[in-house]
Every structure is written in structure tokens, then in C-alpha cells.
Amino acid sequence: MRVKRCKMQNDKFEFCSLQSAFCIPRRGFILLELIVVLFLITLIMGIALVFFANFLPSSRLDATVRNISSTIKHARSLARINNQRQIVTIDLDTKQYGIEGREIKDIPADIGVRIIDPMSGEIFQDKYHFVLHVAGNIEGGTIIVWNAKKSISIQPDPIVGAVIIK
Image 1: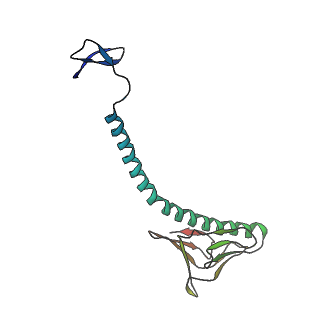
Image 2: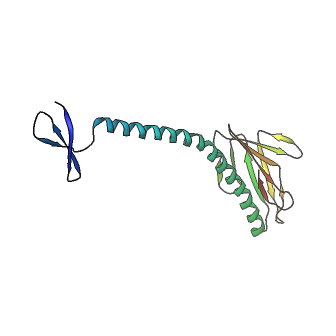
Image 3: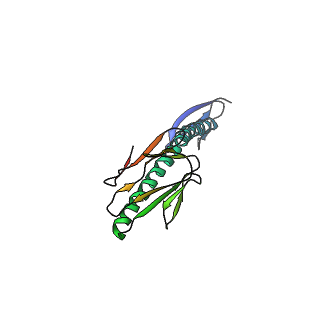
């Protein structure tokens, strides 16, 4: 049975058979239209998944650097407010850091950390202490945080006490 397009009634096309006099109103979508739409949705989702999969490790590294930096800044503020020196400890073996006597935070497993101390050189293991004095200055070296794609350094200014991220 061959079908041809007939006139449009009530915003819907009707299809008529050449061999019969009746028209069949068209409702819904044909299978080919549904397959094309599903293919396009799958293609777009695949591209988005690849983009976000590459974005996640980088954002985790940035968040870790911001957290370590803010912990040092918080310890500096506590030292000035409480008029008592504060110590920030970074445990390179267990990948943890925090202000002594306060909450300890974890560093994600896929992120590496090392310290470049001005006196001792590069440090990859053990605990390293940053001492924040009441005057606002900091004793400690540069923290290098990295993942498979990029590396970021956290440099505390020993005189002013500012924390610089590069």
C-alpha cells in the first residue's frame, strides 16, 4: 500500500492511501526520528563526559592547594588574635595537614606533595612544620603540590606572612 501526504487539518498532516479513499491521521514520531534523536543525545553525552572527566583531577588539585593555603592563612590569623604562635604540620607520609590541636585534613591519594626547605632542600617524607609567629611572619619552605597534569607551588613569605600561589 503506497501512502502520500494529504492536506493538513487541525495542525496535523493526514496520510491517504492511493488505493483507498480514507485518510490516516499522523500521531507521534516514526521510529527513524526516535533513533536519530537518541543517537544525538548519546553523542552529546559522550563528548560532555570526556570533557568533565579531564576537568575533575585539575579541580581537585586546585581545591587542595586552596585548602592548604587557607589553613596557613587561618593559622596566621589565630597567631595574631590569640597572641600565641601556631604550627601547621604537613605529614608527607600519611598525606595529612592541619593546625596543631585542631582538625586534620587529608590530601587526596592522586595528589603528590613535597616541601622545598631553604636549609634542608627537598623533603618527600616525614612531618614538616610551618611556624606562624605573633608578628605575622612564617618559618617554612615552599610547598609543591602536583598531579599527573600540573604542578602548583605555595610560597609563604617569611617576612610579611603572605601566602603566594604560583
